[in-house]
Structure formats: C-alpha cells, structure tokens
Length: 468
Length: 141
Image (cartoon, rainbow over all chains, first blue to last red; front, top):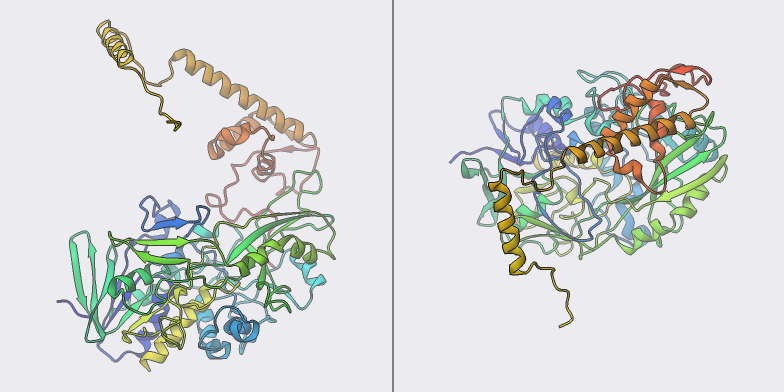
C-alpha cells in the first residue's frame, strides 16, 4: 500500500498554509500527499465558470432559505472568496468570559499574533497603519483608498472606521497585478486577488508534495487509537493510503462528515453547531457625497458596533462597505449613494448539525441562526440609522437577512474539554491525536469578521505546535 | 372523501386522443407537442419587437438629458434582455432600476465626465467579469 509521511485532505487555505509550514519543519526526505475531491482547474477554467455546481455534494434540510457556498476544486474556496482579511478582535477569543455567550477559544489573540503576521505576508495583504486590533508590524502593502462614503463615515466615527484589509494588492506581487477595482472578485478577471493557484503554487509544486485531484476521502483508517491512513474513492474505485499524520483541511461540512464516518462514537460535538455569520444589506441615498472613488471592490470596515457595551444581549456587528458602482437613476446625483452590509456574529446551536446518512453523503440540518444573532438582525434599522446619523442621508433601505455569508464554520470546534469540543488548542483530534483538523470548522464561535485569515493563521499555528 | 383529487382523463377521452393522433399521422399532418407554429412564432416575434420598442422609449424618456442613438439603445436592450431575461422587465411594479443605471455604465457617459446634453456612445454591456478594470470612478492614489 502507498505510504506518505503526511496526508492532507482538501487543498484550500487550511491545507496549503499547514503544508507550507510542514515543508519548512519536516525532516529531509519526507513526503506529503494532498487529496482533493474536486478537479484541478486553471484560473482560465474558473473564468469560464468551472466547476459547475450541478452535482450536489451534500443534502440540506431545515431552513429552505439557507445557502452554503464553497468551491469544490483544487485551491478550494480561495477560487471564489473575495479576499477580505480582517483579523478577529481580541474579544472574539473570549466571548464566554466577557459576555456570557458562545465559548471561549482555547487560545488568545496574542497566541495567534505572529501567525497572523505570517499569513498576511504570504497573502500580500494591503491594510491601514492604524487598525482596531493590535499589530506588532505593519501590513505588507499600503492600504486601499477608501471611498467618499467611507471617508464621511470616518469623519463621523474617527476611531472606528478603517480601510478594509484585503488580499487584493495595491501593487503587483509576483504574477499578481495590482487590483484594478473590477469588482468581480469571486472570479477575479485579472487574477489579482490571492488564491492558492496564484499565491501558493510553489508549495504544491514542491518535489516532496504529490497532489491527486478527483480523490474523495471518505474516512480515516484507525487502529489502536491512532490514524494509520485514509480511505476513499476515485474514478478507478476505492483507494487506501497509509500515513501516520493526517491533516483534515476540508470545509465545515466535509471535515465532520469524514470524522463521523471514521468513528460515529467519537467526540459528541462532531458535526454539531455548524453556522456562519448573518448579515443585512443597507443602501443609503445621500446628498453631496460623490461616492465610489475607492480603489477596490470593498473599501471600508466599521467597528463602531463591534465591542459594544450590550454584547451580552446582542451580537457584535461589522460594517463592510462596498465600492462597486451602484448608481442612482437621478440626474446629477448618480453617485449620491452608499451601500454596505451589517454582519453579525453567531454562536453554535446543537440543532444545526452535519450528519452522515446511509449513502455516506453529508446532510446539513440548519434550523436557523441563534436568537442572539437574530437580535442583531432585528436591530439593523436602528444600527443603520445610528451609523449614518451625522451623514447627509436622504433615505435608508435595509434588506435581509442574506441567505449566506459563504463562511461555513463551527462544526468541529476546538476546546480543552472533550465533551464540548472535537479538537484541542493545537487542533489535534481528542480521540485520534495524529489527526489534525484545520479550517473554519474548528472555530468555537462565528465571529463577525471574515474567517479566512484566521483559519490560515491557525494552520500555521497547528503545524508549528505539532511539528516543532 | 374530501381530499384533493388529481384531474384525470376518462378512458374514452384517451382512446379518442389516441385515434385522433393516429389519423392525423396517417394523413401526413404535423402532430405538435407545444412547439410554436409559424403564426405563433410571428406573434412571439411581434411581442418581442413590441417589448424592445417599449424599452427603447423608456430609455429615451428617462435619459432626456443626453443624446443617444436609437441603434445604441436597441443594442443595449438586446444585451440587457440577453443578460436578464424578459420576465424581469415585465414586472407590474415597473422596470427594474438597474435597467437604467446599467445603461449609463455601459456607455462612455461617466468616462467622459458625465456631461449632459451630449451624445453618448454605447461601449458594451456592463459586465466587470468580461471587461475588467472598467470601474468608471475608482481612484488609485
């Protein structure tokens, strides 16, 4: 049987950031295998609309309005993300202690800080000099230009409004050109935003690494309380490959599904709590703000409703403004408009879960966001009015909640207690410690900030903690 | 029983339909199942032309502050309908707002400084995925 020193399942952010560090730390001569369920498309293929989402890879039950968005292909959802890279706030790691909601993360912001820096370097993040979260070094690239609506908000909220940090570069990096504000980021037409394909090509091309696409890992082979390999299927039939180090870097639907198929009697939280943030859209018609002169798709982040005094009762909200031209049909006032989202954090509910049925396919049961998150949604009109109170706004329209934030999380949470979590602070599985689980499935809470930078930093952290 | 009953065709009706079809086929007639005939196609074409005409007029009425060539308006309407389908513009609540705003973004109006009273030129349907780097207001200082 084939054997490798490391098998990574999935090929998105989680795997590649783990693999990058593993290649630095592994003893000479070791080999790694990356198994990807989807195909290996090029950027040109993605621009042509591939992969087609015609074959459902999971079942969905419960709320009919809910959508779960991801890309199943080499590079995972780096192919379809828009590239926003805020860090979590220090408070996001301690929501139980500080606000009595959710669960504390088994690590602090300070623990992750240097890994955040490293992930930002690898992605080539553009961000501001002053940030709402503490930083020990500047961003690699200068910040994007905020648009006129952002600047008006910044005048009204000088301590809380910032240029949005993102992996859409303000100058060219390697093969990636400077972002030219096409505002079609899900499939960046000029290949500017960071993706695994354009930013981590050297990692998967390393001679110690083998990548096999079209390989669907179904479960981890275990013996004597440890993993000994993986098994799955591909076009040729079933396969089994040996390794004594497994990294699960699939998303928050497939990571728990693999673990449930491996051991239905594993940690009881496996698959429970799947969720993501919930958001509303707001359009503000303004007077005298000639908008959309920012330098990228989304340009502003507002933290005025994040660490607020009532976070025990209602969730943190992140304001995320857009610079894509949404013009008014009004002579001489075409650009007198601003649009943004209010994005609310969520906490895990056991009713929302991933299970595996008879045919082996995962089923996502989603009964709705927590009452805590929905109290935020219900407050949206008031928050939007408060946000623009000092701005020349003629009308506000709030719509939502949106069906998805495309950030699936929380289904194999990390923690110190085996009863309330699936992996430990170093992302080692509680039952099979040579299985490391990565990605946003390990988040104990769904913070309002975008998760990709944090899950990438966590992969660097896990590789360092487990291999050094 | 008071439950909903599926509408069903009686046996005699089925027989009648079957015989009718056979007779028609034997006589060399064209048996159609939902495909439009020439008259219906002409009617559909006429409906499409009527819709195009209405939309061109709507553009001209809305943009009375710029000069637009009828040919450009026609091309835009064709492209808009191709991208959005005609159902979206037949809503009772009126034309979608983006029908007008996308037109402006598809022309050289903003690129030329949003000068009213001048003639605008239709460039191509505004689709940032197909035509990158065309944000008309972005600044990169």
